[in-house]
Image 1: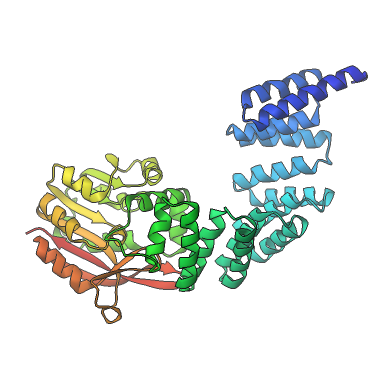
Image 2 (image 1 turned 90 degrees about the vertical axis):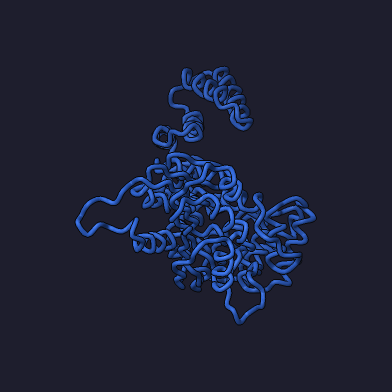
Length: 447
């Protein structure tokens, strides 16, 4: 390009394209970038931003090609290198992401966002010390950057550095009086440390910011800041698990969660679900409901026994994850007792893995389970353990937000509902804060 007129024209087109891009009008932005490339095919910024746009439209391969083309033309683009790193990070190409960020920082050492992004990838790779260094550098360069403070706090919290994490979250809360994220994280750390007075104060602040938030309301009660509800609200369960759904299975693996496997092992001890001694297949004629099915961790082993397998959950995001596994004949977004009351009944198996831990008074559940089970049908579930010596109560809401129950009370409630308790097995359900969570696996049947 030799004349000034075309350059001014291209600068104007680029400004228009960037404006469309920022406003989320991606199609119009794409047209403008392409219009630039029709005049100057090797325009590095248009190629770079077309790459960013391609990634936003779900094509990371094309995005990488475009940005690498841009960098081949003009290598000294720290923003393009940072965006290239972001795309590699999104598709779990961590080493390539790290290399891109380092190249960006070699060009622009005070690039705070690149330091932050590098910290994110180091964290994903469990390179915790390097992640902390990167976040600290980002904060040094941009002290007002609360995003880096929150990320640093989460990294410190994950390694057990609770006081340091509290410092970061408190700084964000003090500088952003409307930050609900910082306050939620503060509340969680205080609960982990059993600092319930401090947690109550945080949740009361949160209630002023979001008075109708079911999560805040429930967690305040879990810390003793208000009356204990008979069960967690539908809003609490839905909000909590919608937020976990995308990474739920990975998170549980880190916590050594094994309830589905333990329930399956217990189920196989029942004659109707036991491998036949003569080698003949187990009948697949059961009507089975997975109550609180989540992402379908129990469904993977229930399918082999079922003529019809239904999953029920309050979280639409969890149901979406379960649906991706193609296990269930039907998935329903409902509260479990509402589903049972409306169902036709004659269920052969009702299973609830880590579902009844969100209900305190289990008597209504047991009553409707008895009503809807077929004769000889099983109710199989897990609960968390409430040590008899700690309280006179039948159940308690712990600061985790979950309910714990006494085994003796659960046995009595089952009997009261007309269900016969076959087994109560004490076990470790998972880990939390590097501590084992004790609980029970319970099998009952309808005579």
